[in-house]
Amino acid sequence: MRAAKGAMPGAGRQVILDSAIRNMNHRGYHGTSMRDIARDADITVASIYHHFKSKQEILQDIMTRALHDAFAMTRSALLRSGGSSAEQLRAVVRAWVIFHTTRQSDALVGATELRSLDDEGRRLVVALRDEQESVFREIIDRGVEDGVFTTALPLDASRAIIHMGQSVCTWWRSDGPLTPEELAERYAELALAMVQPVDGR
Image (cartoon, rainbow, N blue to C red; front, side, top):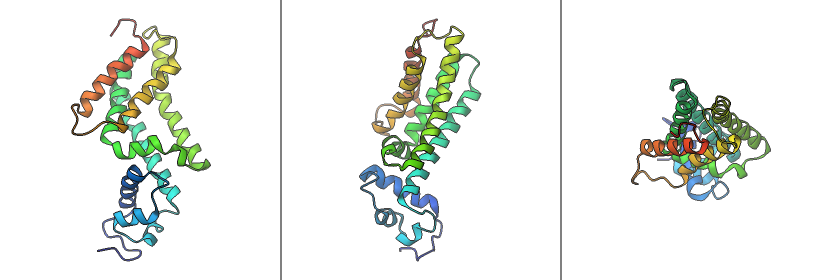
């Protein structure tokens, strides 16, 4: 039964976000209406406005939450990793790929809907993306400075590794041949090859 206006027992913001993510993955941001979101959340459109001012605010919330969570995963992986640049790069790439497989739906919205953000939302999301990029860049730059990595293109390598990991959310399938962990290990190897470690590993 549809919840009455203002009454969302057991629901709240997350139910709205989950519905918005499903709809935006299926229809895209511009093809998704507030009515679509309300219908699939089993609430009234009016109830959405108790939590969000607009569909744009919902999109920004989806993207910033995903970026904050991805950043937390990669930073945690970095802190738990060994001291070498190679070990650190392996760890953050594994975490990055696992995020984009286990959080595939909201990661996909984040990967495809940057163009749909307004100016304020774009500035916020780009700043968070830059913060995430800095995790990869600092590891690779340090590896180059220490003579562990030999790539002459550390910035390009950082961005290529980030894009490579992010793109898995567009094609990975839970019923496919690789688990998130197996795919993460493969991409960690590819990332290391991209920065050309001096010992060949």
